[in-house]
Length: 219
Ligand SMILES: [Fe+2]
Ligand SMILES: [Fe+2]
Image 1 (cartoon, rainbow, N blue to C red):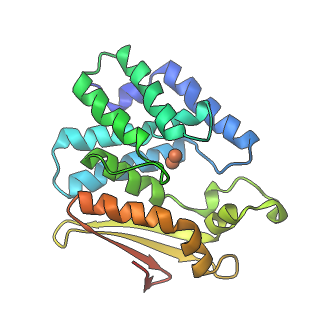
Image 2: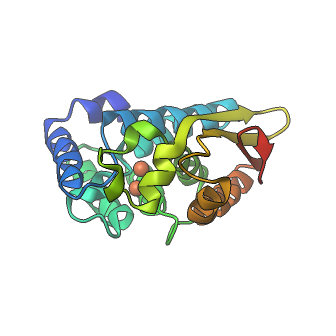
Image 3: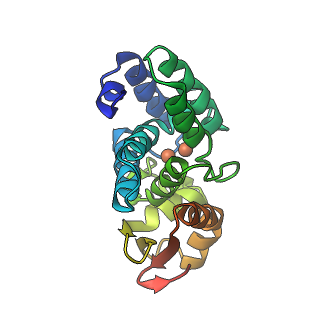
């Protein structure tokens, strides 16, 4: 059975992985490095483990989480669906079963807020973990005058934390935002579609989704 270490150590995947972050950097897009891949992988696994889903599902969520943004190697637009096709191609050469390929590529192809849906527990875990990784450190630009609203909103987030409560069946995202940089309303305006998708994903896992910004509850 394929493991996250097999993916990390695969030289072909690793080249695409590094080039993706390089090309996105040329566009001034936010950072998509090992840090983002690893945190999404870890949180995807943690969500399913904590909620007592089968161990292998948690492992597949970790792999899908690690690879979810690889489609950016071809284009930022539709990178979820492109990524699903690319990973399908990688896995054909790595002896992964069709069942596991199906679970992973569908999760990757459904992580974007515009077209994604929590089609499985693995997809739901990846959606929540990806959307929870908003942080100042991911903004690449240094000249504030060139910031898009999205950059500003990411830059405003000083701390983000994802909590999973298996007893209350609750997934909570807690953010600390610098209100000098972005108002809570601005944050909410930009991230509303993401938060709605997170709520649907949590509900797929049999959980409620809560969002706290500067200790006030918004969802
Ligand atoms: Fe993405
Ligand atoms: Fe991502």
